[in-house]
Length: 585
Image 1 (cartoon, helix red, strand yellow):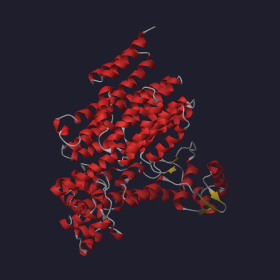
Image 2 (cartoon, rainbow, N blue to C red):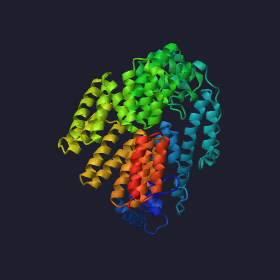
Image 3 (spheres, rainbow, N blue to C red):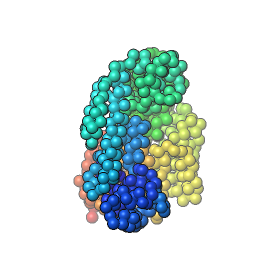
Image 4 (tube, rainbow, N blue to C red):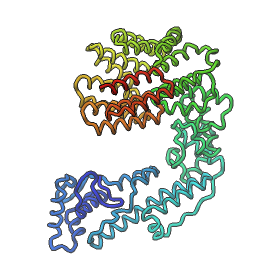
């Protein structure tokens, strides 16, 4: 891309000759031009303008940016074209990113009168386009009785490079309009949130639509003007209502009541302060269902959504599952405490979650007792118990038994509709088969990836294990690529635990390859993520790896202290043995 805002440079290329780049910018913005026109425009005082043009084209030739004979053209794009697209679509955030300065700012060249006029007129025109986009949204906010937002946008626009000068030159003055009637404002928000259903759900009359169209708040086809700072109607933000006026919340609630619960959920969240008893039940069911799907997609968002639900037994169980997926095991266990959960019909489901948490905390005997109870529960609870038994068998080297248990767990999860947990069980089975030396491992990894679908977190976990398999198979380059891909997917999912594990694996790979500086950098990134996510097991593991890298027993002692403070006694003892091995000659 050719950057023409705030300077003149060809992105990602060392070519910096200003005159040829200016020629390139002119062709990109003005379209195909005749050779003679360009020669006379750029070199009006040269004895042989066409020869000067040929020299410039020769300099540009290695870039492959200009083509044609008597008429020259370029297919290269500029940031100004991207800016104008963002302006047209009202994406002010993108406008801020792209408008780094005025058009060709700082480009000082001897230009002919006509070319200089083109530069200055384009500079002024672009600055005005930017101002008008901000002013359009500011005007909309005034119409919607949100004057503070409108004023802030106008002040921001005036502070952008070249805008105040351009506005004063054109004597453009902004006159804040009076706000629309309340029902018209409510209709606008309805059309913004859900254009297809708004007219029927809100009973919007034709004259109101005409008013909104007349002031520019809706466009052809009834599409509402997109405004910066207003919550997206498809975003699951439990606190989005705080950014909306009352009439917007009312519009969202009316639409939510009109739609099926799954589709209505984001709108319910926009109207959260206005819920009645029926809304609480309807929205609550949709929220619980969405949180279950977020357990493997985005457990962090699931935890946010839990804020909207009362502390009922089923909600506490769900909260524990979310915390467990986030690696916050101690908190997950605390969420299950108390008599209320034991007195409901959820005992076996509670046992399934407790078993998984206790196992991760190293309390294997207690975990297996809970798993035995979970075996008598729902298909999902049975799947958790079988998966846990498989993990125990895997840790004890009973790989064939582990593979069988994971296969049975995957079937139970499938029967329960827990597709994400099915992918996890298949992932575990692939690991067991690999440890067993079975050629089926590759096929099962492929099945796990297929079950994971496009869910970033699920794919991240499978690829992380696949990377371990490649590394142990003597293919470190492939392993590193898989760890990096796993990291990218974990970052997309926003799950700190998965990101931390990917960095830890990368650190261990670099460590084994003797790349100590890269290993330490990776370990430190893993440590930061583990601490931020309060995953003390991963924190201790990374500290132990750092201790070995630095040959520093003090760091390993810190890991042991951390585990003891968190009451992870079994794991603490395991690391204490590693410390004694490090101390022995």
